[in-house]
Image 1 (tube, rainbow, N blue to C red):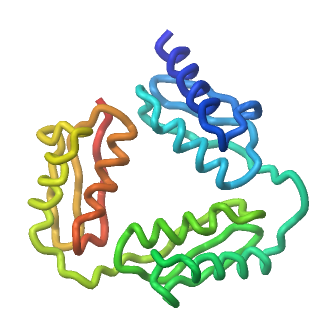
Image 2: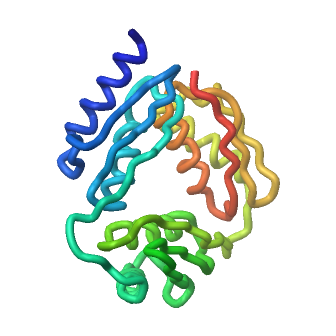
Image 3: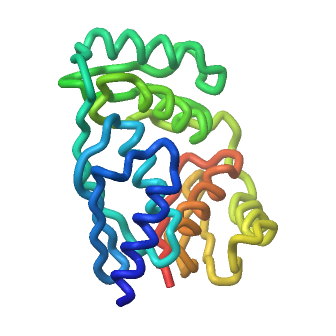
Length: 214
């Protein structure tokens, strides 16, 4: 009964999102692990479906087996590469001339380096919405220009300010620019949010998220 209820909640959340055509998406749930099957119309829709499922209460993990089927036409690797370079160049959030684009069989690989994780994520988001993209590998390195100082204290303070967390259940340790999170959170979405929060600390270059969902 628990798995059936979880499956229905995921289906309801997919149907609630206007950018997702849930008619071709199948959902199975077992022990809190949800699997998405079927097909979607773009890589952006595939990402949106996974994000929608991740918000549902009771999710412990997600397996995304969705197939991408573009409705018409074929976009060649050269066209995707040109469009990807252009859209990243126009994005003010991404440092100029520090991200390189490679495309092979409609799969985009991003390389280079940036100062913050949000810049890395912005570059990935830019290319996700391009026609013809079948997947994205984000190999952009994060090289902070600010030194990591007092990271543990800053991350703990951020958790205490956030009403989404029970901060006492999350253990934060830092070794230079590397942060490790252990402990428990109440949902899959809070697990993701905890990692995002840690990434916001100045000087952080890597986050090891080892939280469990209770």
